[in-house]
Image 1 (cartoon, one colour):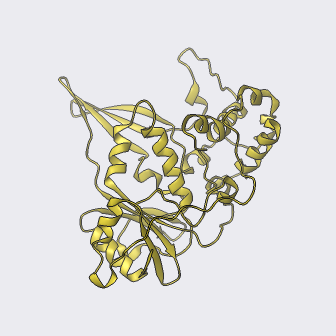
Image 2 (cartoon, rainbow, N blue to C red; image 1 turned 45 degrees about the horizontal axis):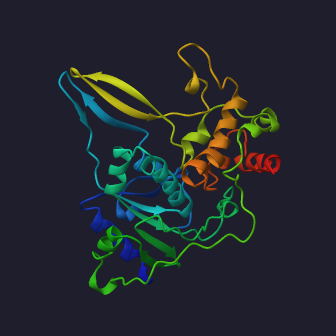
Length: 326
């Protein structure tokens, strides 16, 4: 590990931005958000962003294919991007997304292109934020190894570790006076006590009727805010658009909270009630994804808690489900 000044890091970001798109946390006057920006505007404090950087490796709307009479052409136009300032909870969410899209039977080439083109620079948190519960999920708020470069904020400087070949090459562009030589990568801290989570060997059918889902979700309005703001939610639909004599296919974010998400062409809906849909959301995050990938699809970032207009708390719901599952 080595120390570099924050101003030196800005110079490196400016250098990288000459050939790559720079994305980082910026203050828009209302909230902190990840957006395309310049090195001078990137925030280097401990505030957490309103949204995660998810849309820069899994875009809200992404063109996948163009169909003409004779052929179907994949969209391979993915610009190289530097994502600066991702917090450990968001890096762990990226680990989950990578497992979902890349480690199954069928790898997603579009997600893979974003991962290949992105350089990800993480920054550890200095303190726990309101609504955050990453520690209760067993995560280390100061460190994640699922990035190319990991920074530890020490005031006017960062402690720097490169964790990939891409990270090492990026740091090689530092001025000679600030060259970084890193030791072996460290590992994340282990949790001190029990963590929120459902054992992957639980039979989910036992939780369908043994949990009072209606009471737990009585105030939910079905707005879908929690799914769009979550760094691990990845439901999507396809949209085909006719344009200039061709058809373009897009992948667009969707939400399991919406009634039409599971509506069949016959008119039947297997998740007709809001309680049914929220049950799917909770069990998917804490049980189904864990069974499939080994990772729970919740990182305790707290964004859904802070953004829900009626105060639905997924942590409270998960703990209630855990009690029934014991």
